[in-house]
Amino acid sequence: MDYFRNISLYHLMIGKQKMIGIKFQPDKVIHGLIKSLDNPKWSDHFKMVYLPNTKANRSQIFITFKGVAWINYNRFYNNRPSTTGAAQIDSSWFRNRDIPGGYRRCPENYLLKLELKRYSVSTIKTYVTFFEKFINHYSQRDIDSLDECEIRLFLQSLIQENKSNSYINQAINAIKFNYEVVCGMPNRFYDMERPRREHRLPQVISREEIFAIIENTNNIKHRCIVELLYSSGLRRSELLNLKLQDIDSKRMLIKIKAGKGNKDRFTILSEKCLAHLRQYYRKWKPEIYLFEGQPGKQYSGASVLKVVKNASSKAKLNKNISPHILRHSFATHLLESGVDLRKIQVLLGHGSTKTTEIYTHVATNTFKSIKNPLD
Image (cartoon, rainbow, N blue to C red):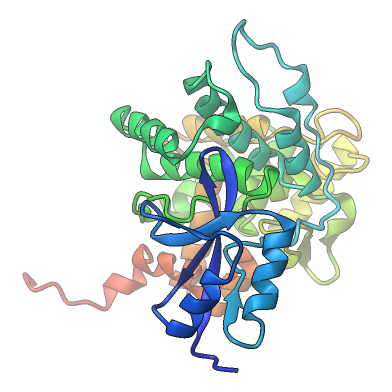
């Protein structure tokens, strides 16, 4: 077999019909085999050969090119596994919400697919919100009749509204999820242009400001929330999902279960925070989750945000402080104190050191060694 010969298969939508697109480099052998297929046609728009997407044609392509050319299915079959975590997905908010008259909610099969893939509640809300914005932009059109042209016009309208690049990319992801995952046409919009990703530096505050926030919390429960966010580098969702057994006081570790990317990890536990957690437990007596709104029920993300905002306001910090800024500050302060970048990566749960390297751009020790030319 000549491994230098290859063809790539794509999902195409031509005349509202699903097609198989075949892309290949000029080659007499491949060109001859293409002609032997059942009524192949050429698309000037996609610059590739195509034929109806049927089981018979898929089988014919495999038989025709087997042993002659490598068949690249990467853009045709989506084999990424669904999340396998055991986190409970509650989408009742979607089905029970009040909606204005004439508003189109996204199809039930869209929500079901999100649930089956066990996406987090925040991701489900994001996808549903953006997809509904798209289908309500074309409220008089059948969803299945919308193609690349309509998607580009919708994205253009978001640009005209001065939406950020991140906002537009989220909209693209929500739309692609419908056609590629729900409708089973992976990478149909493989040539959809995306705006360049914005690279913003993380916002960090000083240790003194962190301590001021902690000292201005209202009670021992709020104090523990702020201390854990900072001293263990937790995401807000990770804090809310903590259960009593996740605090390992003997090893001074906290186990994070099914964090971002459905990954488990350990992070460090502060001795000061542990002492305050014991005080908190004796007073509040949580039953299942470490922090509960009602007995046995998780504390809400909005409540955590309010705790941080109120304490920051009382500390008279003229900054927009969020729970995630405490996580950024944790990583940056560790780096400034000489902790190895790889160790910080493990504590934060980053998949690559490249993600963690962003903190080198804000750590003060990066600049202290540089002699200012004016001095």
